[in-house]
Amino acid sequence: MQEIIFIFYARVFYTFSTVFNKVMNIVFIFAGKRIPNIRKMSELRKLKITEMNRLTVEEFKEVDKLPLVVVLDEVRSLHNIGAVFRTSDAFLVNCIYLCGITATPPHSEMHKTALGAEYTVDWKYFKCTQDAVNELHNDGYTVLAIEQCAGSTLLDELVLEKGRKYAIVLGNEVKGVQQEVVDMCDGCIEIPQFGTKHSLNVSVTAGIMIWEFAHKLFKLR
Image 1: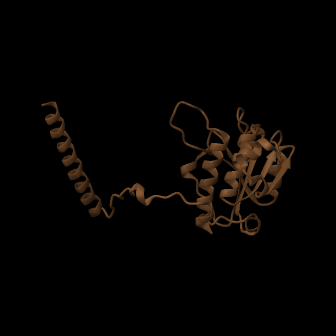
Image 2 (image 1 turned 60 degrees about the horizontal axis):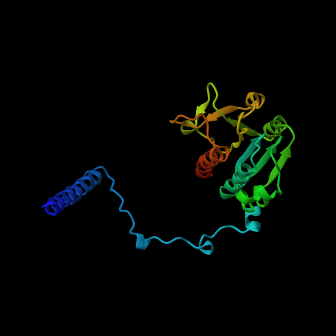
Image 3 (image 1 turned 135 degrees about the vertical axis):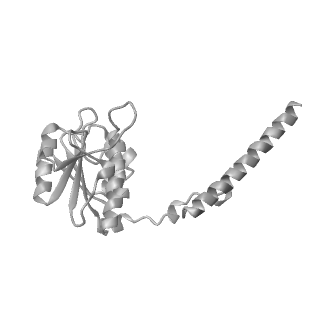
C-alpha cells in the first residue's frame, strides 16, 4: 500500500513539474525570453590547457594592457599578493604597485598562488604608498580607494569614462587602506555586502574589483 501511495505522489509531482515548466516557457516566450536548458553531462567536457588559447609570456608582454593599476597598501599576506598577481595576469592589468611591507617577487610562498604571474605582470615597489599615489596622479590616473567610507560609491553604481586611466588601492588585511592614503584618492569604492562580516579577504576583493573594472574597460575600447 505504501509503495502504491509513493508511486502515485511521484507521478503527480512529475506531472506538475512538467506542466509548470511548459507554462513558464510559454510565459517567457511571450516576454521575449526562454528558459535555457541545462546541458546534459555528456555534452560537458573540461578543456585541456592546450585548447584554451592563452597568450605566451612573450605575447603577454607585448599585448595592449588595460589602463588599470592595482596598488597594494601594506598588504602582509604572501598568499594574497600572489593571488592579486594571478588575477591581474588573467585580466591584463597594466601594473601592480607594491607598497610598504608588501613583499616583492621572487618569493616561494608568493609563487604558490601567483603560479608565475609575478613574472608576467609588471610591478613597482614604493616604500611609501603616498609616493605611489603621487606618481599615479602625475601620470594622469584617477586613483580610487577600495574601502568603506562615508560618501563612498557602491561598486554596482560605478561608471567609468572612456580614455581615462584608473588605479585602485587595496589595503592591509586588518587596517584597510590608510586614512592618509584615502585622503589623497579621487574617490572611494565600496563593495555592497549583506551578511554579518564587515569586510572581504584582500584577494577576494581584488578579484571582484579587477573583474568589474576589466569588463567595463573592455567595453569602452
